[in-house]
Image 1: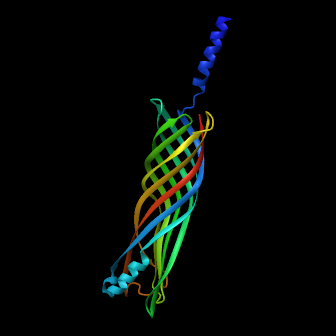
Image 2: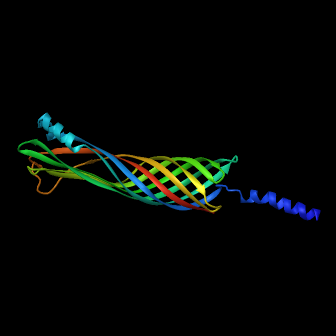
Image 3: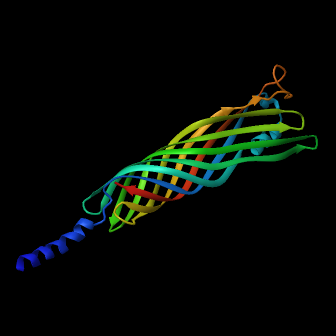
Length: 249
């Protein structure tokens, strides 16, 4: 009887330890949420623009340089590994991929004079975001609070165009993977030993790209009679807020 009582007591003491929630090991998951894309376009004029009035040059620069902000949804998946060390500290690494729906084309009509006006257009379309991040967090029972940071690359279509009532028509742009960094953080809660839910925020700065415009078919003021050149510098920044579910192996 005494041995049976000690065995039962031993089981009662050891069971909570075996069932203790940890964040050790590999995991995979899916996520969905909100995404916002922000882009700034700056134009520089060259060649025959130098012989035009300063007021016209300033009008084109001010009208064609633009700050864009658009939002939409994001769907993604993640794969990672956590190591819970020292009791409560969690370190890890994660790879994530998101499909974004953030697309904006903005057009502004700018009047220079009674006989001359321009339609300036700028475009941003962020399509995908791939990130490789390190993780550092603090676990308290079933809850993990963490920060992340690392490398990110995003696929985006960027561009600009112009059409004047005098027939000046040009356009330029790129479809490119833009590289930069990503930082963020979140809170994750273990629903059971294998399944967790999380809320996460990330900010990605993907740097900038440059591109030149080219004459469109039928444009006036085109070579060889005239050569007007425009070069754009356009950046891309992303904000993502997502809800995710992970399965821990």
